[in-house]
Length: 426
Image (cartoon, rainbow, N blue to C red; front, side, top):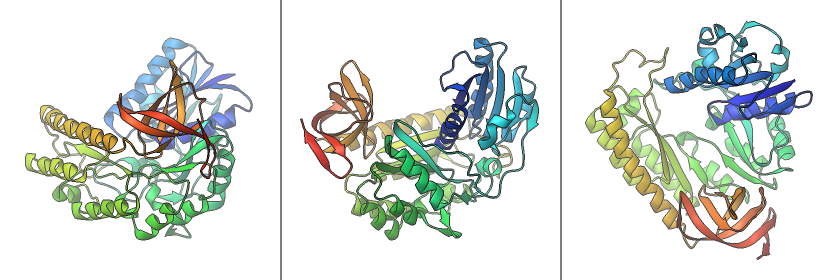
């Protein structure tokens, strides 16, 4: 049987698709490209209305490719509302977020199998062979219940994977890939023996022969203990994606975010003391229902002050069950104008960050080669371009020379052959 795996949404979803790929490819032909297949498995997203809409639209795209295809739907959109998929002609089975590791058991079954969310981490997916960059899921669920967010209702309460399981998978992965990204619904809440323990986990990965990168974090996880641990790691990538959501304290309270702008600023300043050239990026929600013009101007002033390396912004999307679901939405034109203003600052900040890296050596993991130009990401998350054909999964030491496309044009100084700073000159 040929099976096509399709992912919509976050890095956690991608990890789960990678795990399904490894499990299913032992007995089936498996692809992640949208192409003719006998069975399609779609891991859906529901973080916004638009994400849920795309999760429905992919079903139509599949049936145009193969009108007789079987389709299994799983993930957040089907956890939220399984009925939106059950009436689709080709959908045979609908799961939620439980039992993804047992996906093979649902092949050939028909009906709805949205079970209760697990209270313990489901450790039945494993990814051990990935080229270039691999994801390792360390945690699932969230206890924060931000007033706009549906995810705790769809993923359940926070639960962490065992240290033994994480390190086993990471060591396996490090034999084939040069970078591992630790991911989860709320990475900052990783726990051992019910105590927050992200520094302990990172310390356990300090000797792996690959880079270690963290996905999105909450600013509350930034502490001296955490920073002392990661700054001592030769393989840690100084890339901190800290979700801000608003630069206005009033709006932060209404969002049920548990920090102030002063707290956020202080934590970022602490990072800069340990890492002079760190990438510090963020998320901002535009058009929260209670956000007035003055509130938004405070956000603009704060992001200018922070000089983020990059800013990901999203228009507010009302989600069912959340505390602000019934509040009146802001005018679409107002939201678009605010996005336009934030986009301008985003571009300015990103350009300034890239310029600040010119003349400073970086290490780049080659991911793609096109027309004799090799490209990849630096340890501090800048896309770098070099002339020449270097194999995918090669680590280069480069010197940035100029702004180029969405990143930097660089000159290759050496090719890295081993993890601990052993370089071959070119």
